[in-house]
Length: 227
Image 1 (cartoon, helix red, strand yellow):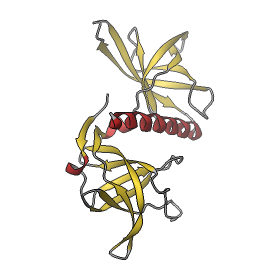
Image 2 (cartoon, rainbow, N blue to C red):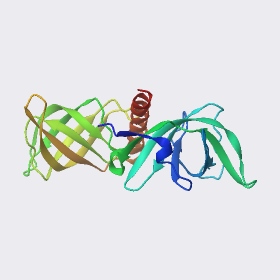
Image 3 (cartoon, rainbow, N blue to C red):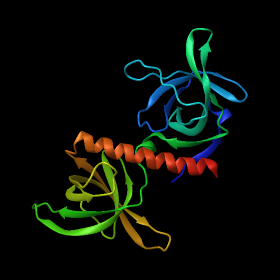
């Protein structure tokens, strides 16, 4: 579910931590707000892990996340140039965003996606049941939430086959079921949202999932902020 849209000027503060993603780069760059004017933000120039300054193209669209108490605010802003604050602190000049989306911290890593997965439930005796094709509710780098027409025991295990993640190929992983909650839909029918944690998923695959989720999230937020 989309978060609440708020006016950026009411929530952005000098000294506040912000994180940026630039185009064609999945890395997250940490910064802070050095100054705020009527139409721009001055933020400390982010650096790579090797200490190299990050320099976007003039006019490039930046995806930002401002860190608040108990929540975060995500926004898009245009890169306007570089300079130095008080002749010593390298800074970016970026256009002041008009609005941001407020969301809880935990929502940042769980993204709603439109895909189906094949699962096989494993009972307490280790018997593997027939496969089922079920829709995904949301996905993160560490787990998944699925929608079942029936209850699933907690705790239990399931085998999961996932396709459609760019660069990850066919993902076949065992999962540990940690949650099963009944949900009433708009037509008053009941489905069960089942949360499961990935087990022994290679770091390279986790990274591909996170990159995919970032691209989905960036696209979703761009649409929401432009409405």
